[in-house]
Length: 291
Image 1 (tube, rainbow, N blue to C red):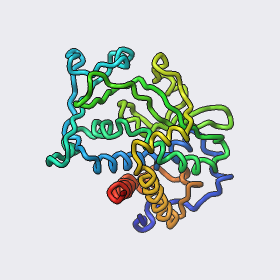
Image 2 (image 1 turned 135 degrees about the vertical axis):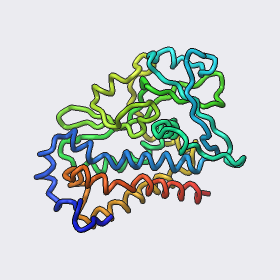
Image 3 (image 1 turned 60 degrees about the vertical axis):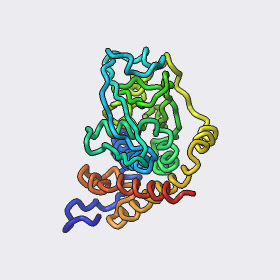
Image 4 (image 1 turned 120 degrees about the vertical axis):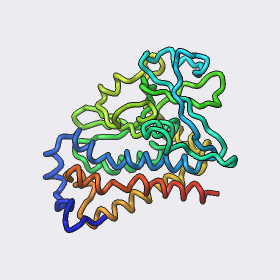
């Protein structure tokens, strides 16, 4: 990732005490947390590319034909401007392959993120906390579960008569000034347009009548998650390895987490250009080598 003839070269590292407070906290979070959005994409791609079933089609279904839609109390709460997508999976053993190249990128991301939010939070939460621990304005990062008002709804073609109401896992960031932000790295599954929200913005998306916001008991959630996927610790370790490799490359250009927010947009984009692919590779390695 060396910059050609100094172009795009990261600025000399500034001390966090002098650089950080001059940049508003929302801007710092938007810049510093961008790598985790990339990492979440890599996690989802790695999980899907090694799944036993390929996603062979993603088809829009007209809600007027309600016999095509899943039956669930969840859907009576959603607003009318929701688009429904049926996701078809077929066994890879039958020769089926993913339809990634033949569908819109946003739909593909939504389909692979669907039901993977908990795995993404599990893999990334500790690192997010580590990175933000050096910010003087951040007090804590919590793991929360919500039920979201979607723009897009993805559901499996081989569903039962009813589809359960899925809780959605996110990270909530509390500032020392008392403000809150939400890091939602798997927002694509709901058709949302961004991954960092103020708490007010995110509250407007919630279906409170379905479930009240819930701060999870992390140990209990992780224990249940590991029952479903015993290979997840290896996946998490692979993600952490990919992040460490990226950090090593950044350091060659004088970039650390402490001064990441001082880079220009172009510099950050260049440094992050291969991160999702790197994470995907490590996730694939972890899932294919696990006993």
